[in-house]
Image 1 (spheres, rainbow, N blue to C red):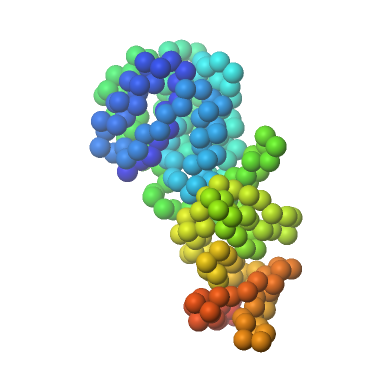
Image 2: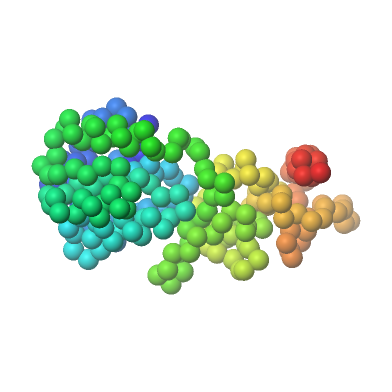
Amino acid sequence: MLRVLAVDDEVPALEELAYLLRQDTRVEHVATASDGVSALQDMVQMIGAGERLDGVFLDIRMPGLDGLDLARLIGGFPSPPKLVFVTAHDDCAVQAFDLQAVDYLLKPVRAERLAEAVRRLSAVATPAGEQGPDDVIPVELGGVTRFVPQQAVWFAEAKGDYVRLHTVDGSYLVRMSLAALERRWSSAGFIRVHRSTLVSARHVSELRFDGGRVLLTVGTETLPVSRRHTRQVREQLVRQFKALA
């Protein structure tokens, strides 16, 4: 089942496109955006929250950030969603396919033609839950989006509705829950050591006991392990180190 974003600055066209997409049984979820900047912000937020985005149905002629410029920015994402252009203009097809578009639809969009585009998107979209060799988290820094790779993260710390990612280069605040990050990265060796802390096993260099407390050295930091999580942490670290041996 596909999760897609439809982008068009013309409200009637956007509503019609979203309606037709929602009628297709292969489409699970349709989000919408009325301009390129909003679409880019929505995508960064989706990725940061751990949501999957399989494809973007994208108009070309839009004020401000147009569809081709937005597509180039999307192409810079570590695991970019696939692109389907939906436009009233037939003179941008070459540029669109240079940007590796899955399909190029001309307005007004016919239901059967859109269904073919969805079929093509389904054939190339990443299966649900599949990630690349190293997942990333997008972080907004003064209007610039930086991608923080999973392997660079020492540990993550819950901060209300946010999570602070700690790395060798500093820390970054992202809007997502620690539980969502744990679900996303548990298969990559991230361990819950405290109700507010998630640690990367690959960066753990020491486990020690100090006056009844269990402490981990992670990167250059020392973190406490709660009594509730002590046994699970020890067992998981032993498995991790055996696998590396």
